[in-house]
Length: 245
Length: 255
Image 1 (cartoon, chains in turn red, orange):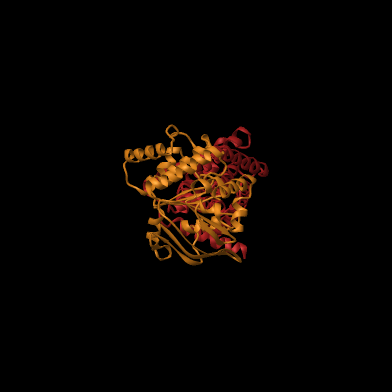
Image 2 (cartoon, helix red, strand yellow; image 1 turned 90 degrees about the vertical axis):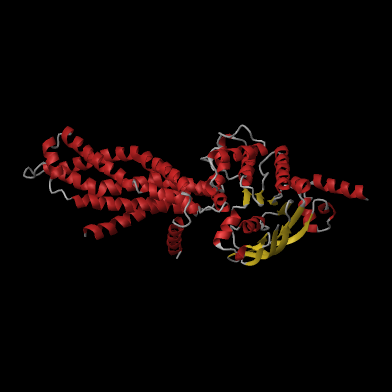
């Protein structure tokens, strides 16, 4: 019952976010600030993780392809498929749920605790639109981050394959080009847009409706990370079934 | 003027306000006092429109809040200023940004017009050299002044203050009280202050309402509070030895 109530409250929050918009002149500045904070601010960790995940996937694939009859190009093929279909959109989103999600929950939660949200409401401002809408729009840039993650992941795979002695560069690149289906990239971008919406709204919900003090802000951040991850995992399953099934 | 007519407010089984009626006059500092849990905060949030009363009406210069359209309510909100207990300044903005915020949101003034207005109100609250500083870089007393400046920058008709001098030293608290009273008289605002501070009660309480268990137990002025025989009020206001002595001296002087 408690969960059903929370789900209902979440959807009411989403509805409220799009009502009574803030002046575009103000909103534009807020969106640019959030893009800088949520997307560009997370690029470092995304690039770092993607590079090494790409490398690890390649090494593991290479170590499992022990049959000499199997071509080395399969290493590049497997790395490409893993990175594009799953690691770049989903794994990065889980990392983002931790980094960006906890930032969103704690910043909105602190505003709640220190009555800054009440101050907005008293002024007659739709606080949900003012606080959450720019975050939703900013995270719509997330596919751009996922595209970079794909590129860096595959680059990491190439570095691991070539410099680790698992496959020659030519074979790896041939594998990357083998049976390429551009729909897989579309699928990854569709997923990343949905995940971006989840990353912006679920932590906002936990921050906005939290009660208590500083300790509760910390607890809300942890809860928001858990629920954002759960929703991403479920959405990943549903989207995969719908788009690839 | 704000007229409150028999308002009730409950949260589940907790009946917080049990039928309060009163009037808050224009150009006067109206104080709400009472013990913790007496319903002061819920009452002021009802006045601010943050909570909708379950029963009863609130009239702002004759306009019944519950009968206003959403747009009219929004416009009314813009005529209200609020000073929160913890100041509630936006951490990410400078002092100047905080004060300019309502102007940015609700007016189409040019940057220079807004700047002039911000300079004027900051000067009015005696803050002339803090424009570019962030809330975390200024003292609690200065934060309160910025909160007052932000509350009055739109020329509000109604000013609400929740414990405006909590956490301040007595001298700064008195400066803030006097500033609020001066602004109230100068701009002919209806000011409602929620307070625990007995110095404020004695100093600026032009009208005082004492709440107890969600009901209005007593109302009067800071002069009348000395004379009252209401046991609940005297127990609350004269809980300290100092105030007991002050009251005794006042009564002896009158006799």
